[in-house]
Length: 207
Image (cartoon, rainbow, N blue to C red):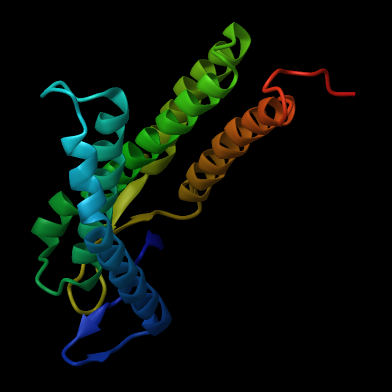
């Protein structure tokens, strides 16, 4: 059974099971994330303070969304992975939480990239339609691929993660679509950025 972060996690003071490397990688990623969060808290407060009123700007809303959905994904995923207190009943309710928030976080990230790409293109009608259609189609597919055929997976020490039931494994397609959207928006943005003259700021025709 293929699982997102499956394994035994931590038991007592030492690691056990066959996923010691995965456990260490998770701890390292959590440590880096916590350090980055604490380091950027002053900048976050300055960003909030710079808002002209209680009505937050779109940029501020997107900043809050990407920052705290990412924290939610990390928290839910690692509680499930390292936790040793899940019963079959509680795991059946909990396992889907991390995949749901993962798709939400991806949607926010892709929305930011899409808006950035449209603005770089000077709100070109063609680019707006391409990005909007790609966003709607890709996110719909990502919801399906990340939630369909999902089952709870428990290790020997009662952790709780989400997995696919073989032979139909769909999660890798979710990541493929995520990368495809990133490449699409990055490619469009790069074309427009290269087409601007660094001296005059005006566009010139690429040959």
